[in-house]
Length: 225
Image 1: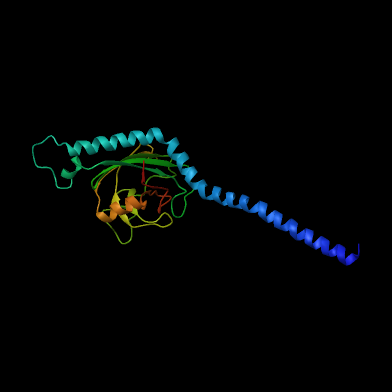
Image 2: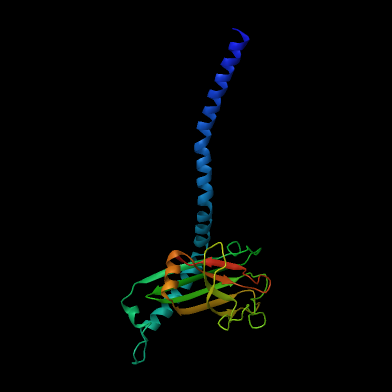
């Protein structure tokens, strides 16, 4: 066989080999991208599963509080934002709070979890946190700019996309532990239509602020449970 013909055959064989490699590798690449896309979901599911006992406790506490509001012992008329609760369905939400979810992400081993129930537009939250790097930020001595008197604790409900810090909505009542690095929190709110839409869209979240991580040490989105 002549040298030119051998070169032509080698070229053809090389092209065929390249096509075979591309054909085989493309599905694998696709699967790899699929795994990357699924990884955050799997990681969050893992966190929710591990926190299930705490979440169940929070949800029970929130449900008990909400049902108590719907069944007042006094004969006085029920408030207008409470009366529709008797006929509305109850929806449960959970939020698993980590440092990786904050913007920017925080280097911390702290963890927080919350359970919430919604009936009509009434939203009741119960939760706890532990392992903070530092005590909660004191907004009385380290206020936001411009000052907002409603920002009166270190744990808040915000509205915004996961990759951004959204506007403040509500402050939660906090009961810190003796070490100031752990504790419990609660909140009861009447949500606006806009806030209800944010809750439905997955853009209503909790943010925990500390002295060391002023912008946020823990963050978690409310999700249907």
